[in-house]
Length: 101
Image (cartoon, rainbow, N blue to C red; front, side, top):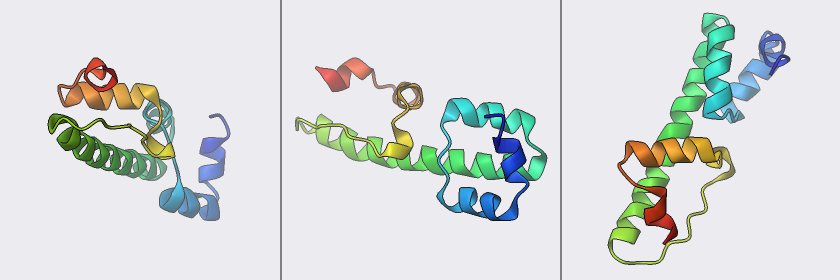
């Protein structure tokens, strides 16, 4: 975490993280508070992309669950933070228990 602001000053790292980077919600929020505006914007775009992907995966799985299908939820590595997943489920009004029964 302490190295991230320093590394963001390197153009090649900033470009790489913007294109391929993975930042969990917890650390992303912390980074946004300590990074200069331009670099914080990169982290905000990564978090927005993560949210869009998680919502897409949740919607696809939700449709199948509501049809009565048994669904094995296997979210991509980008989205595996249980804290992020729990927050996304809660935002959709879905209890984690609905998915584990």
